[in-house]
Amino acid sequence: MIIAIPLLRNALAIATLPLLLTACETEKTADPTQAPATPAQVEGTIHVCSSCHGLEGKSISPTFPRLAGQQEAYIEVQLKAFRDKTRADPHAHTYMWGMAAHLSDPMIAGIAAYYSAQSPVAGAPGDPVEMAAGQKIFVEGLPTRDVPACNACHGEHAEGMETIPRLAGQHREYLAAQLVNFASNARANEVMHANSTPLTPAEIRQISAYLAAQ
Ligand code: HEC
Ligand code: HEC
Image (cartoon, rainbow, N blue to C red; front, top):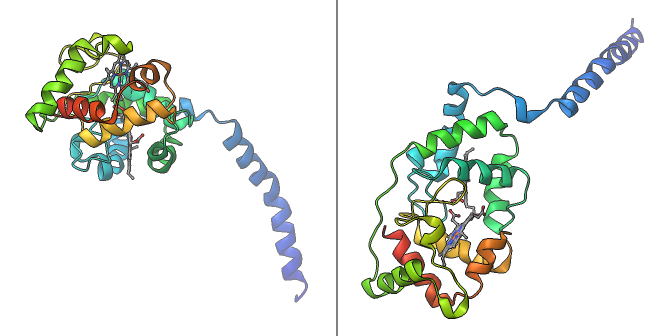
């Protein structure tokens, strides 16, 4: 009886081995992008997101971008870029790679539909001189340095379109940080790299102040 116990354990271990292997195999071959997402599951996930991005995506802390009223297609592209680790600026890495790693395509679609349907946060006015200088760049660009008018892509009211993000009412510090990320290529995007590289720190402050106030 005394030796029967370890023998039994071994027998059990051998019996369960194929089951474990099958489980591993299933995990490896299962396509996470096809897993279905019910409304209740989307709601549950958004509850997790709200700890940083705020209720309805109306974040209060400038580290966490506002998602309320953001463009649906843009949210989808960014969540996939976090999941693929192609959006690789330091905060993307620290905060969002883990969050996005297990989101399926249907879940991403559900999340994007939810946040894009929320009303955007009204902007907070900043220093009037800075805002006026920022508005000039937004509307006219910097022709002598080949910076196009931002409104040509981001829209007259910085509301964005499709995969071009809404900038209006976004946190000023977040916007400024992204312009620095594009310039350094920490966040790789050819178009925005070209548009942000010529900007001076003062111009980044001005444009961010203007956009945060919209
Ligand atoms: C622990 C805090 C935290 C949690 C939880 C979190 N995020 Fe984020 N999220 C961030 C930060 C910080 C950024 C900005 C990353 C950067 O600076 O590049 C961000 C960026 C984003 C962006 C890009 C916004 C833009 O304007 O480009 C989206 C979309 C997003 N998060 C969605 C989500 C979703 C969906 C969830 C829940 C599944 C979630 N986040 C959970 C911290 C968080
Ligand atoms: C030719 C079109 C185009 C022009 C002009 C343009 N942008 Fe963009 N912008 C984009 C696209 C596309 C993205 C999304 C990049 C990505 O997917 O990472 C973007 C992203 C951004 C972001 C990141 C927002 C976020 O939520 O993370 C900021 C900030 C930004 N642009 C500011 C500007 C400013 C300021 C100007 C003018 C100096 C400008 N853009 C001009 C196309 C443009």
